Image 1 (cartoon, rainbow, N blue to C red):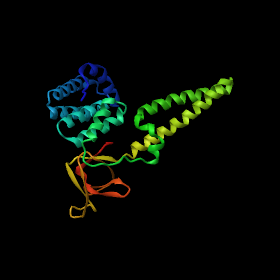
Image 2 (tube, helix red, strand yellow):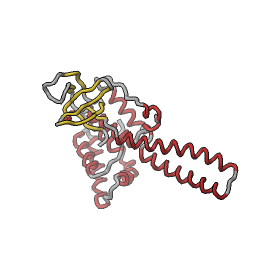
Image 3 (cartoon, helix red, strand yellow):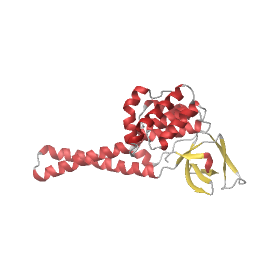
Image 4 (cartoon, rainbow, N blue to C red):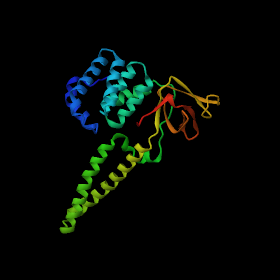
Amino acid sequence: MRLIDNFKLLIFMPLLFFSSGSCFAAEGPSAGELYFEANRAYKEDRYQEAIDGYFELIGQGYVNGHLYYNLGNAYFRSGQLGRAILNYKRAHLLIPRDADLNFNLRYALDQIQDAISADQNFLKQAFFWLDEITFRELMWSFAVLNILFWGILVLRLFVRPEWSYYVFIVLLIFWLVGGASLGVKWYQLRTDRRAVILAEEVDVLAGPDSNDTVLFKLHEGTTIHRERIEDGWSLIRLSENKRGWIESSAIETIVR
């Protein structure tokens, strides 16, 4: 499994700090050192030290797909399949087209015991390309489309060359699709209740009580949808007709 090497880190770290949305200029050198140390610990098979280092960076606000990817690698190497898949999926939200991440995620998913089909609702099918684009990329793309669209519209108020009409129609189509895509992506992130089973095995019960009837069992690494929380219990769903209650401590949501 690939781990970002130190040479790439020289380019990566400024992007890491920028993407956090906060200013940590005074902590920059220590954060870079912490990242190097976590990478070294991983390469020397000291996986818990690597995990602690990556977690400390994330706790300081350096949220980046590559950090979650490396964290997932460390968890996988340490035999914690559920946490590996959880962090691979968090990384996928930020770097969805990374080939190494996608390979490792597929490999990890092949290790789980429960065969769960992917949830394919109407929006997911209609806007199938959204899984390969981040929300930030959509925002920048739509911002550029806005400039071009309104620019050609203003141009047509003063002069009307024949070509501008066709450009306007094309831009209008892209503008509508881009705006709809941005709205759907925002909605998907706001309503994303996916969670990953972290315990080796959990009982899914008929109600939020340990004495309730066991409906079925789930195993580490399985992705479910959490519908609501009640007194330390979570109502989870696998499909429209398959749901039940599990202890909230056994799962963790992908979107934090």
